[in-house]
Image 1 (cartoon, helix red, strand yellow):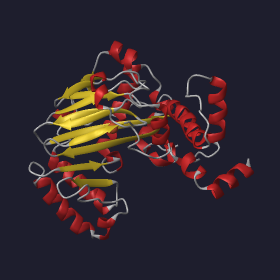
Image 2 (tube, protein in one colour):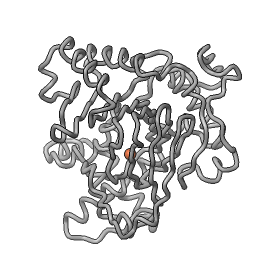
Image 3 (tube, helix red, strand yellow):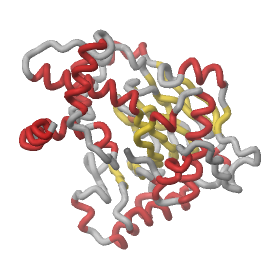
Image 4 (spheres, rainbow, N blue to C red):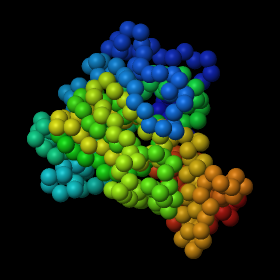
Length: 344
Ligand SMILES: [Fe+2]
């Protein structure tokens, strides 16, 4: 199990919450939300509430650029896509072509890319920023505690992985329809955007087969069906607003006619991985020509499938991929799978 060190500290019994930064509001609360709606809808239905991070001064573009430069130096998970020059204009820190460039060259490109964000078709994503900036780690800790209190759900006990991602995008950039395993909170800091969220449980909209393919590693498995667009709800996000995405709730995002800065906080949780293991088992059963029962309909079958697939789990996962996809990756590699099964 991997959680950033500051969050891990919070998981201990009786340990006081960390003091919040001086740049955060004096009462220390970041989230302003209705507790009843949280308890009713957390991880079931999308809903909007308010936050104060846009007033904190912590998420201004110059500060984010400095953070990105540190991430480049440390080969962090940083990605910049330019849609005008093909699908991928830049990609740093993930082993692709541009990692051949020196950190200095990448930093210069980053400055250029960010200074032209308003006129470019660019989307910049900085993943796991809490690992590169102590104040961001502090914010993540505070938000996690507040979410737990608002939802009455033992989030720190259930979570297996958490990350804070910063998203910078040019005017009118669109993120296509997709699903995510994690429970997500999208905070708007600068500019506005529309987030269209669909019901997480609608299997006409996203059939089980597509979710199985998603859990086998195909991140674009969910197919957009224009004729079902009216099943979605569009949330217009302005600075100071957050929208909650339940796990597997399909969504698309369209940036307004402005530069946008957003913070995405994602949680993997044991309860979500339990369901994922059933989908992963069903992926292989369907490959064998069977018609597997979807999760939730037969506790006995779910339990058996989970038991088999769980034998392939990563024992000490440190990345999203290791938390969620390790069993499939291993089962697709027959030699590893046979060795592990024989050992049991
Ligand atoms: Fe998403």
